[in-house]
Structure formats: structure tokens, C-alpha cells
Length: 274
Image 1 (tube, rainbow, N blue to C red):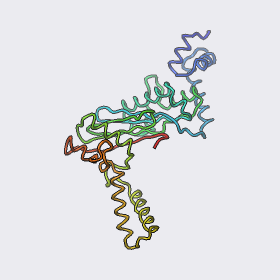
Image 2 (cartoon, rainbow, N blue to C red):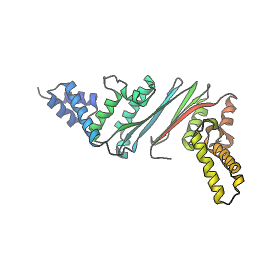
Image 3 (cartoon, one colour):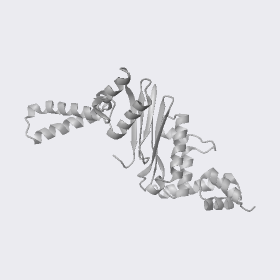
Image 4 (cartoon, one colour):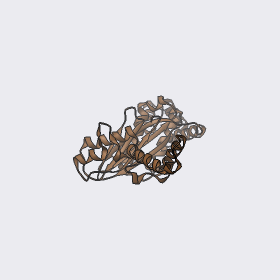
């Protein structure tokens, strides 16, 4: 049976593969769409194996929030040319849509999630590898839950943040906090959540700077503690100065709306930007 343009178009919609790839797959499979899809998938697997040692440092980062749940995903590729392609961005969006609907708890669970056509998210990525010839991988998947949530995507799709709050919050206030996370890259919500390893490192850096400056040994711990408090001010979200009004901390900005309002969690994903 001859391969028709309608057959090629149908397979292209199913697979996302190029027209010639679809034509060849249909010819090889004798117009069996299921077998043709398998041929395309194997091509993607072969390309993925061949390029497994390549670095996928470019990509697309997207985020969304709905009904107390927010998620962000980063689909990585090799070149900025592919990362900016509309089909690649749409692929990233489709993965995010699955995450928002199914709410998986791990990246591996997200990769295994089935799509409407029966393929998994992982299969979808593999199929797209066969189309572009580039290595692709789901680099990050993060989520937060809260009474309210907000997401922010920085222009260029290289940086996204998600934030959870303990109560109802005005849209602009929540967005301002999500943008604060993007701009200031805090390490934790409060000092209590800063990992001990980070605390120890900051103290040791402060001690060493003080030694090099000739400070007495018996003052080093006090100097280190002062440096740590400065670090908390600069690097924990609620203590940071609000970027839109440095007369307020983020905690004070939130309390202007509601004295009990606070951030319960945040995530920040970035590719190739600070």
C-alpha cells in the first residue's frame, strides 16, 4: 500500500517527527502506524545513546500554579537554537501540563506518567530526540504545596520560581515574592532552614578573612557570628530587603497584607543564568 500524505500527516501529529522521517517509517512498517511509531522511537533511542556523553546545558524552564499546587520543569537540550524553537517550548509545556494534572512526587514518576496517546513523558522526549538529533533530558522537576501558591517565569524561559504561602494572598503580592526569589536567589525561607554545612562554611570563611586581616584569635568566633547574621539578612527570603522597596523586608511586606502571612516553601530552577 502506497504511503499517502494523509498518512504522513497523521503520523507526524502522533509522533512530532519530521515529514521524511514519518514517510520512511511508514514505508518500512508497511503503513502500520504502531510499528512506524516504534521505528521512530528506536531512532530517538539510538540518537540518545550516541549523544549520551554530550552536555545538555541549554533548555527551557517553565512553571505554573493552580489550587494550592505549583510546579516547575526544565527540559534540557544541547543548543540555544533548539531551546528557542516553538516545538521544544511546546514540548516543555506539555510535560508541565502533565505535572500539574497528575502531581507526581519525583522526576522519575513524572517521566513514567502516561499521555493521552499512550506514550509516557519519557517516550515523548525520546521521540523528540529522534527528530532534532540533539540530546534532551528532563533536567529538573520541583513542586510546592500550600494554602496559596504562585509561579514566575523570567523572560527567556531560563529561570522560573514557585512559592507556597500559608494563607490567602493578593496576586501581586505573591508575584512580587516569586520575583524576589528569582532576583535574589535566597538559600532558605528562614535562618532555621539553612543547612548546617552552609552555616559552617560561612563561619569558616569569616574566620579566615578575619585572620588574614590580623584580628586576634579570641575574637574570631564573635566576628564569624556577626558575618553569619549578615549572611542570613542577605540570603534568607523573609529577612531579605524587598527589591521594590528596600525599607521593607519580605516578612514586613507580607505582614502589610496579613500579620500571619508567610512563605512556607519555594523552589528556583535556572539554566545558564545567575
